[in-house]
Image 1 (cartoon, rainbow, N blue to C red):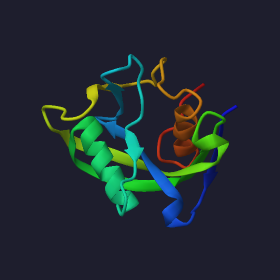
Image 2 (image 1 turned 90 degrees about the vertical axis):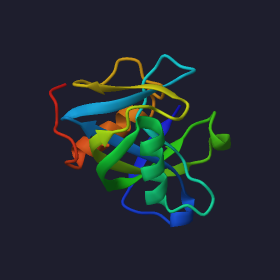
Image 3 (image 1 turned 60 degrees about the vertical axis):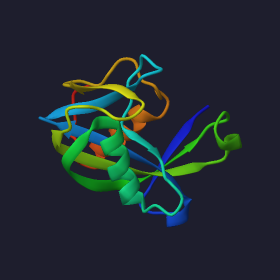
Image 4 (image 1 turned 30 degrees about the vertical axis):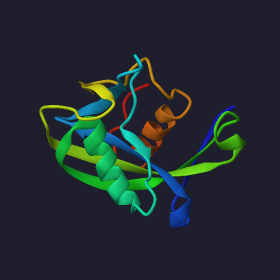
Length: 147
């Protein structure tokens, strides 16, 4: 079973991922990898020696083409899953971005982005990413929507 937890902070060197919940034109921004037919929140792995904020900005650009945006940290999150990192807890930083403008073309493994009024039905990481959205809502980064 996959477990997602949230923390205020953690030692910087433990942060392996950055995930960026994004909105543009007051709509959710999701991306679809060219090898999948599911939707995901932009994000990815931290490069060696990279600042976690730089990871978030780089991943947001690579996966959405965002070139002008405001970005803020939300919190630290962790995932523990039997099929991930030998079942050990792995950590990432959750961010929120308000995207003002995009490049006209994507330059990575992402096939397309979508601006959605509602959350997608088909998630790439359904055991993780809906929890991240809910935590961002709980912390006031997104409006609470009726269930």
